[in-house]
Image 1 (cartoon, rainbow, N blue to C red):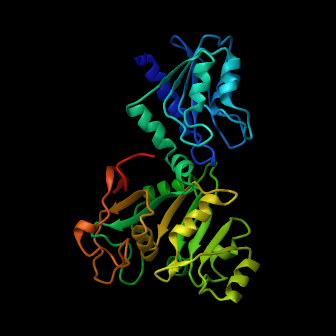
Image 2: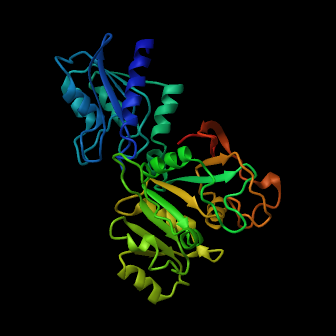
Image 3: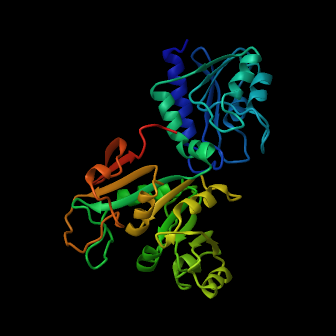
Length: 374
């Protein structure tokens, strides 16, 4: 039976898991707390892929005997050998007698097998539901989607004025959102595995697509959807490709000499099939999810033509829209999603699980394209 004290310890484990955000891919973020009665005996979290998992980190940090204690862990313990040994074996050897888990691991190598092993070893195992379970699943939504589908979890981010414009009719967009919103986006860049823009955005804005705030952040794989390989060799993306990994998706329409020039400059170029004369979004996502350093998450930042391709392909999982309290106007001013659009309102893509919060003077609306969680 789960008690109020159990819930308190699991909240602590979830807070610990958050410390690993953006640092553990392709592994999930996990936190663990070992307790007996009201006393915390040890705690830990998974800091980086290849390092101790949360359960092992908590066991190593423990002071005194933990026999008969309870461990609260945010994700089902693994039961297979990877770069580290199985956490189920570590728990069995530790003398811990009770395991409280916030969420199951849907990956093929685990998916309930870890709990079976623990129960067969005579340990008491409980799995939470409700809000804490939902928070635990949310912490690892990208890991969970990739585990089930092999595809990245796609986040579409946009910043627009209150009248729905992402730039003026002259193309000026700096800055629609406020400093607090831009800082939050940089932090998000440091948490995802890849970040993408279209060829138009690459040409007009000449972005870096990097995380540029203080802290221990990893730089994401930078991805450009560029059917004809027109990315300028003088762009910041190309010039810095030796420092930050950069990939360009092209189609068969891309001239061979342009592909070679990009590759000679240190850019990885991948050819896909076409869909509406553009890079096939589905093929691109399959490549990102299956490459040696798999991208579990992809942040889609611009522009409106690329966003339309993702919307029309049904490839977006999560939407994060920053709305600034200003009017821009202009019938030729850009909007977040262009493309063909839907003929009828009833055909439009519905969004679910909508939340909002203030970020400085802006409002951030977050929503999902499915009612169900991964």
